[in-house]
Length: 331
Image (cartoon, rainbow, N blue to C red; front, side, top):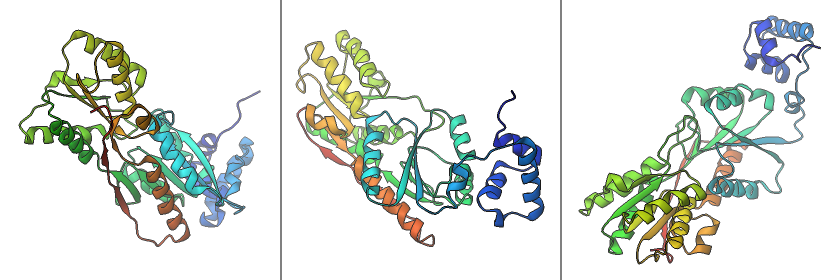
């Protein structure tokens, strides 16, 4: 038995793009008769069976919204998704979730968009190019990007630089003299890198007050509590560490706190710790952090998307959400 034919096989045989095939299946009135005939002949010859999803958009029983993100297991993404689901509750929208683990997977997702029968797309921390955004729009899909901006579509962004500035100002006011920074410093090719803004704001504010961020106190740690904990066990046991650490994410701050407790350090007397995000557990452990209101960003994205779905002529908006310092026991 041979392998089941795919849309890519049809594309090769008919000599047209997968997007054209999707238009033939979903919106045949928008395709030239000669092109439509070539595609249908290829489908018949190969015995290709279009996915059920390719037919759903013609039913108009509901509209489909997809949320796409690099890592849904991270707390910050989970809380943004919670805001999105709450905002969509009780409305006639079906919600899909798609997780991206590589640039190749991201490209394949874009290639398959028309087959997915989507009306709207919300992306979390993914850097789309102008060309990719135009391709998505050509599929008749409205989109909103969170944590990345473009003049071509609605966007919700966070002032990461201000977050770093607030962290530095607070630690300086607390009388700290030696400053550290903990973050995952390696950039991926398929997600945004908010760390640079947080580090720039932190570093420049320290400098403006006569302090420096010593390179040996910039720690490259995974955005993972357990990995950060293991790294900081070694750092604290060495006896050489700063008296203040700004972690670029709360999950890393938790690992630092756990390591400090295990080696017998007092928080904040021996080392002050401040995080970023204000995810759910931050209040529970008394973590001082920079709040970016993750749930709210998801709700704002839904509002922007639905407004454009109802009125495609509505002006595109860039919404910048504020950050704020939340002081608790760790500083």
